[in-house]
Length: 205
Ligand SMILES: Cc1cc2nc3c(=O)[nH]c(=O)nc-3n(C[C@H](O)[C@H](O)[C@H](O)COP(=O)(O)O)c2cc1C
Image (cartoon, rainbow, N blue to C red; front, side, top):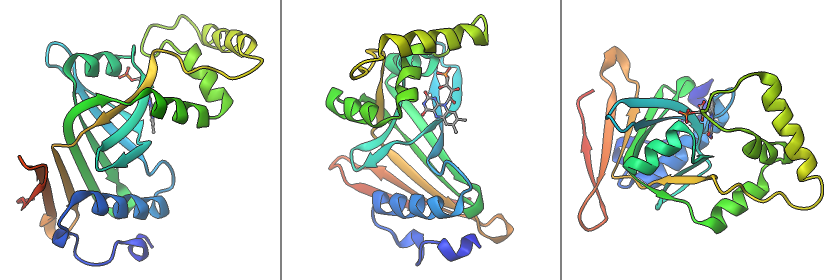
């Protein structure tokens, strides 16, 4: 069934990564049962120990790949220290993978405000109530915090918490992988060159 949604043509003929990524993400919105924008985000801590967890991709263009989080969370602190991260999408139904690596920028306030304002009210409250990645004594403590912020922001707009914003991975490489029979998979990697264009190479699977 997923085959019907596959991007037409041979993806290894692509000459730049963003249109190809857009096409694959579009395919995934039709093939995946939920969260086609779910992506594993890898960071390293101050000892170089890797860390990985899922986030949701909330925007992408030629400037990079954006997600939002609590800057005081483990991932937030790790990225603010290293300014580097990597992402890995896996769309199971399509048997495709995309990997992105690069330095990380902080999303501008206007862009983060616009995204925050577009979130459901409960999610905006949640961003205030959750001290993400810190120890929580009980479920009740979280629900109490949510109730307190709901009361606090009962009237008017809910401001974006200062510790909640977006990160943008500015890709230095983007790799596309597609399953082929007998593990002779296709891999195509785009690497940013000195003139800000993309060098393209096939890789052994
Ligand atoms: C499908 C999925 C999507 C998620 N999206 C986000 C997200 O966009 N931002 C976020 O902060 N956490 C998201 N989470 C929760 C994270 O995986 C993680 O539990 C949380 O951010 C704390 O991670 P940290 O302690 O490494 O910072 C998501 C979890 C799942 C399973």
